[in-house]
Image (tube, rainbow, N blue to C red; front, side, top):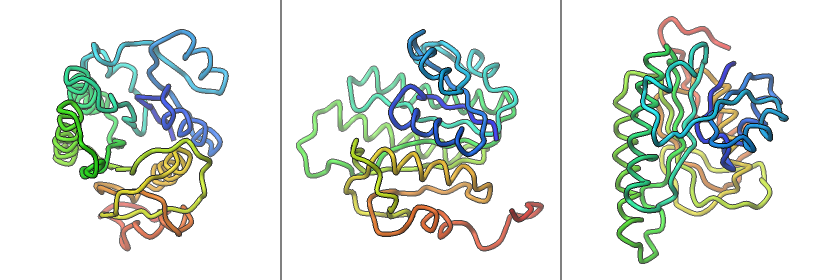
Length: 226
């Protein structure tokens, strides 16, 4: 499988790339600096240097030719509204359009829990961020691509525990970035996981079992069983 990751220089994107390569996939991604390029290419990742916030669909599309999957794992993390618009909204729309131009049918978005941080007194910029993320989830789900939206709960840097809760609705708690990357790897390697919004948090179920539990019982018309 050939996978292109937008946000590959981030924590989840980098962990995902390493796991996919371990599983035999070819991984490419977009980076901002030469240092990021050298670090990732040392791990077997093909990279392109570019500024996501300023790249339109026409600029992104040539990078995606021959890819099987486009993963959008970038995010502004609730910063200023202008940055949220550029990265979490416009860049996702451009990525969807670029995938369509390049003939990449599968599109996976790493999103957020819509109700995350409801216990906190959020700033206007943070409230705007969550509103934008929800609207973008809607647009992705209405696209013509074979999409997947993964909503992890509060991300932590602790080691992965290898067990999670994965399903259409979950309580917002927290989860390690390592477990998020492992779940996303398993999801991408399952061609029958498509057009689903999945929420992900810490839980008792081994990751392979959690992913297996959300695979449809029957394949789509014309789809071969693995």
